[in-house]
Amino acid sequence: MKILVAVKRVVDYNIKVRVKPDGSNVDIDGVKMGVNPFDENAIEEALRLKEQGKATEVVAVSFGTQVNQDVLRHALAMGVDRAILVESAEKLQSLAVAKLIKTVVEREQPDLIILGKQSIDDDAGQMGQMLAGLLNYPQATFASSINLEGKVATVTREVDGGTETLALDLPAVITADLRLNEPRFVKLPNLMMARKKPIETINADTLGIEHEPRLKLLKVSEPPARKAGIRVSSVEELLTKLRGEEGINL
Amino acid sequence: MRTLIIAEHNGKLLNPAVQKAVTAAQFWQAPIDLLVAGGNDAIIQAAASINGISRVLHANAAHLAHPLAEDVANLILSIASDYQVILAAHSSFSRNILPRVSALLDVAMISDALAIQENNTYIRSGFTGSIHNVIQSTDHVQVLTVHSSRFAAASLGNNAEVINIDAPAPFTKTRWVSETHNLSDRPALSSAKIVVSGGRSLGSAEKFEEVLAPLATKLGAALGATRAAVDAGYAPNDIQVGQTGVVVAPELYIAVGVSGAVQHTYGMKDSKIVVAINQDPDAPIFQIADYGLVSDLFEAIPALTAAIKQPLQ
Image (cartoon, rainbow over all chains, first blue to last red; front, side):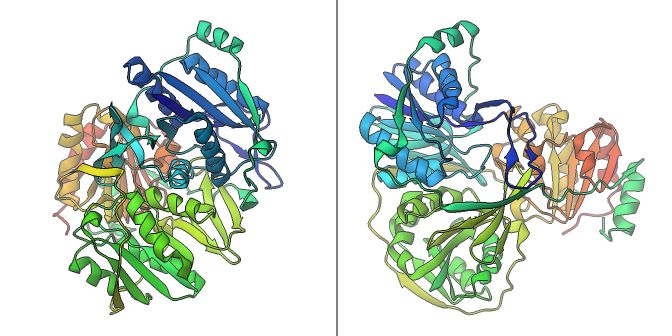
């Protein structure tokens, strides 16, 4: 039982990004980068399945330039067995990455693919569903629990209004929600050891996959801010304002 | 060419956000079809009554009783060649299905569009709403979800033609097992006129219920929660307001003990009036609140509840 996880390198979730003065993009020069938080949940779940004896190997893949080595090292330090970097100089969009992961799946033949449900930079949330579609695999998005028995994964998903549980025949694609687990802290010795592990690099251009961007970024701006209103000093004053100035019948 | 809307329903009722998706779809000025997978007569009638649509396409089959992404995607793909635009209101339903469709059509997908402009250009947010991107699609087919609070609801009164269509064979490698619903007499969070939301300051599941439920009941409001409150186990996950939860835009949003993390404000900043009640005068929520009250919520909320004259309907 082999599990494949994908790791995206994104701006650290604590950082508020700034827009470049010319509005061409966000300014991420010198900004702290890290593993997309939902991808950490995916890695953690794969490692737990291995620790439960339900998986034998966990492989991590990332897409980008050599700087992505840092997120793959993080995955190795968490405990994944192998790491692959699919190298591409140009920024890859969701559909291109889905096609590239498909080629990695065809090569690695994992029984299960666990991805984060979305990345915190693009906020698109498309990758898992796109990959499952391209592979004609079963999919379970927004997973809050995964139970593996033989060749079936039973997955509980967080959906609007409650939860839904699905049974998927493997191989399948699952996307991780934050409540799936709490990712482990990486200990410094593990990080040091991970530095010595080899990372296999594949040039995206050698995979024979069209990966041109389909969406053109025309402009980036700060959204219009919602203006702060007034402070009220008491519940009575609040109700007076809501009733009088806003005309709400309370 | 035509425009296709994927109509979300829960097996009993049509989701009101479909009316907002219709307004968004009218941008293309092409005939609009609503696709309903599964569903009952009431849902079909509600769909056909939305002004601005041309036809309702209804696919009914045993395996669509609990529609899977795989089956709905295959259904959409079976008719996709008639459409230049395929869209839905952004929700856990649509964002589960449409990326699968877009990949199989070999086109990029635009998720959660805030606005639609000429020449297949869209505004959407990134970095949890901290930036707006203007993007242009170069694909021949547009597949997108729309941020429904940014679009007005299309009116009712139509009597559109209903056409039954065949569903492709079921995708047997995925099986629906069960579902749980948060049973509540309160209005649905995504369409409620008033929302009362609680944060981690409530301190426990018991206090969350004890303090907020009477206020929500008296206001006829839906209850919401921050991710911190949900993660702490004070509230169920399906009432989480925010980027990874539900996006709401009620007439009145009352944030109780909510700090105002961007993750949360992403899901409520389109509300008409925001009231924040928090003990911390520096909480970021006050920067976006129309009315801020610095007060101990355990005193303010019971006082507010008592001072409201009568239950609203």
